[in-house]
Image (cartoon, rainbow, N blue to C red; front, side):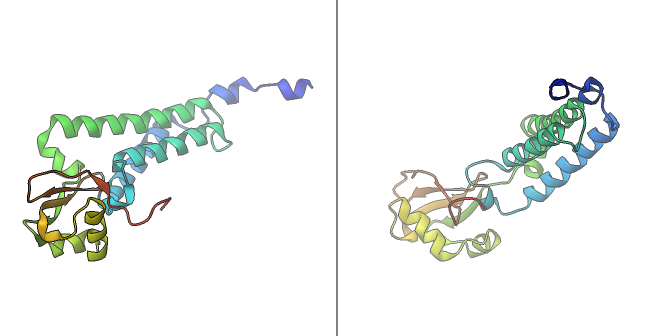
Length: 181
């Protein structure tokens, strides 16, 4: 019974890996995934922003590593979590305070229909088929794309629409399929 209650406090708190190495690993992984996700089709992220998805995935993995046998101490897990949060905060801070960084750090909105005309190049770029676009417009009560003044794919993957009457429509998800991707 004593064996079940015994705790090795040194393994619990004392890191077995270099703190600097963990910070560098966390930094490299965050930046690599951020760059990769930044240029992926925004439709994969649904209603959450790319950075939000990235932080959730990395935090879950870093916290899991700190609680499993991959790392022996809680300190190592905490260092990874803090590194990831620091990079997320820095990127948000730069995006807010340095306007020149916004095009690099944030995806821009992309028009798909302008003044009743389809923008095929932009549709190809985001792999939005005509059927998908028309389905999204129908969900907003629009029968004909020619009645659309502006329909654009937002940074978070939603389609926002302004009709020729000037009435903005509700934003709907531009995701192809529901459920996990």
